[in-house]
Structures are given as C-alpha cells and as structure tokens.
Amino acid sequence: MVGLLDWSLKRPRISIDGIDVLLRRDVAIPVKRFNGRSIPYGEGSFDVVMFIDVLHHAAEPMILLREAVRVARQMILIKDHLLKRSICLLDPATYGLGGKRAS
Image (cartoon, rainbow, N blue to C red):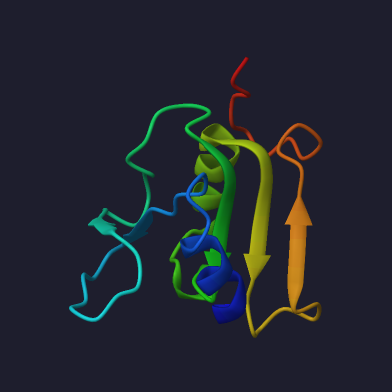
C-alpha cells in the first residue's frame, strides 16, 4: 500500500485525507481526529474510502462500514491483515450496508 500512497501523492489531481482516533506526528498525509464512529465528512465526499488495517480495532466495524457507504461515491477498499483475503473492494451501491447513496 505504501507504493500506492507514494504514487498518489505525486499526482496533482489526487488528494488523500486521513482520519484517526489518535493523531500521530510522523504522517505522510493530512489526518483529522475523529470519534471512531462517525466519519466527519458529508455524503458522497470521496470517490474512494480506504480502511487500512483498522476495522479489526473498531468496537463496532459495521458502523464504520455504513459511514463509508455514506461518504464514498465509487468504492470502499478494505485491507486488513486479519481478513482471509488481503484486499476487499466494495461498491457502495451494491452493498446495502445501511448508508445513503449520494446522487
């Protein structure tokens, strides 16, 4: 995933915003603090939402997945070392996780 991050940071039309419950000093992208339940962006704010090794830390991962459906326009990427598959791609329109689709 680092290669993807490096590639995207060199492309001017791609922006990456991070959120975390714990802010760290040495980060490669801008990161906002959030409460671990509610993604602090409006509906349809992002083309892609990525969860990189975080869902297994969440007390209620389905809440975060519903939030991802709410803010993602095209795709949700899940990478977690505890999954049987290393990477999972979800289309928010296909997976009715309880979120609303942006028009």
